[in-house]
Image (cartoon, helix red, strand yellow):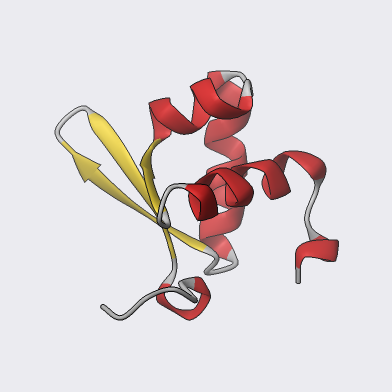
Length: 75
């Protein structure tokens, strides 16, 4: 599946995998260097493909790998 992703989508997923499958959108932005507006579109695209889920926590978005991708899971 990773070969169907753009470089930026792949970098978002790699950041999530390094951080136990869960990060705030702001932390992803700082770790990947992807601009805020671009990151929003990437996350929407990944959400549509059921690769990640986005949960709003007040003014913060928490991005998680979807259950089907959370290999290390156990949840």
